Image 1 (cartoon, rainbow, N blue to C red):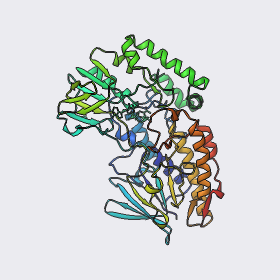
Image 2 (cartoon, helix red, strand yellow; image 1 turned 90 degrees about the horizontal axis):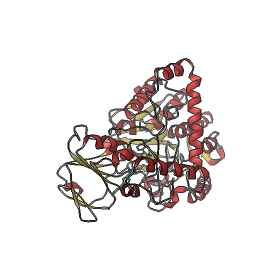
Image 3 (tube, rainbow, N blue to C red; image 1 turned 135 degrees about the vertical axis):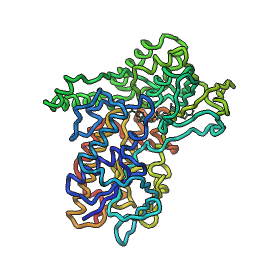
Image 4 (tube, helix red, strand yellow; image 1 turned 60 degrees about the vertical axis):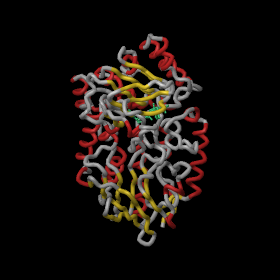
Amino acid sequence: MTSVGIIGSGFGALAVAIELKRAGHTDLRLWERSHDLGGVWRDNTYPGAGCDVPSPLYSFSYEPNPHWSRRYALQEEIHAYIRSVADTYGITPLVRFDSEVVAARWNADSATWTVTIGETEETVDILVSAVGQLSRPVLPPIEGIDSFEGTSFHSAQWDHSFDATGTSVAVVGAGASAVQLIPHLARDARKLVVFQRSPNYLMPKPDKPYTSFHKKLFQIAPVSQRLERGGVWAVTEQFARGLDDESRVGRINKAIAMWHLRKQVTDPELRAKLTPDYPIGCKRILFSNEFYPALAQDNVDVVTHAITKVTPKGVVDTEGVEHEVDAIIYATGFDSQDFLQSIDITGTRGQKLATQWADGAHAYLGMYVPNFPNLFVTYGPNTNLGGGSIIFMLEAQARHMRQTLDRLVAGDYRTVEVTEEAELAYDRELSEKLEHSPWAHCDNWYRHRSGRITSNWPGSTRPFAQATKTLDATAFRWA
Ligand code: NAP
């Protein structure tokens, strides 16, 4: 029996574990560094945390949930869904909690991976990384950040003992997380200062609670929910195809975003601050009905000057103004570019993955890396989306990995390794598309410091599903 070890227990890990288990590969174990499963949906508990992809699509195709309370589910509900799916498919008992993988070493003689988990070692035939792209929160390198005497934390490490009521709060960042948490802070805090380095294109969110009628309908006629899923998928495919303002969809999106801004913000000065000066689609397009009204409140100030330092009392901007606050919340994103570098991975002939990816990560189909046999990476390089459901992408990857494993077992092979030629040819084609993608025109978290766009898949999800539908055995060495 081929043993498989999966690092993580979020959506990506579950997608792979369920796919393999259903196909009869039962020697599975999942290592989870935390005490609970759920990945980013366990960690991001800030007020208002939720998904800006509608839940009928942001869920496994084979496990629809007729009980979603609203179209855009909030974190708690998504986390509960993940746990329930893990239980339903018998994955929970396979998870080893409080088990942080720190290293993995390929042994050519035994054709196995030796995985270091804390002080212990385990050996598996196949190693699957499912650590995601957004699991390591980043604090900005601002002078004096440690000197602040009030409360401060990152949005992904929310301190639930903190009560914003009647306090003064600074939020650093205005991205996807900030847009969700700021309306809550604006409601509770006496004063809120938002440090916005770049504005985002923001579209209205067609959110609504599902009525008991909807829930009944989804239960007695599951096809109705599948239809909603299909409809959402078709819309997000169009959205992803036309992200930039060169395209008709992009121009429509931009017109909607600008209309939304005009409608919700009447103060010309604030409106100017919130108007992006870069092409639409270059940073993630955000969705909210509450963000602009929150910023327009009297107790909220939007500061667009850069931050020079943090002092014991607050935040100083480039105008020399010290904004004194009781708390600073950093909604400053994640270390998304140094893929898998928190784990010391050594492949054939002592090759380090960190060295191979020093100029930015790349992998065949985002999953397979030359010099690293029997290593499968889910939500790896160039598999993130500018719009659409990542769950759809994760399922496609899991299906491909299952085919690879099936062939390995059926052919009585011990190792499978993508060839350098296949990976290079794949990467060349991808890089060509990425150079002409909307993400090439501004700073965003999709790019490595070398300039390479390492996070995103260019375009809509259908071509990725097609590219991963069947296994091209010639792209690999089987031994
Ligand atoms: P983010 O989108 O990367 O936003 C980080 C924010 O911090 C940006 O506004 C950035 O400004 C700002 N920033 C970073 N360093 C700064 C500094 N030194 N000074 C001032 N501002 C600074 O991070 P995020 O909001 O946590 O979201 C990350 C990703 O998580 C999203 O793109 C999305 O994929 C995912 N997410 C998804 C959802 C959802 O609804 N599905 C919700 C939350 C997060 P610049 O823009 O100028 O760099």
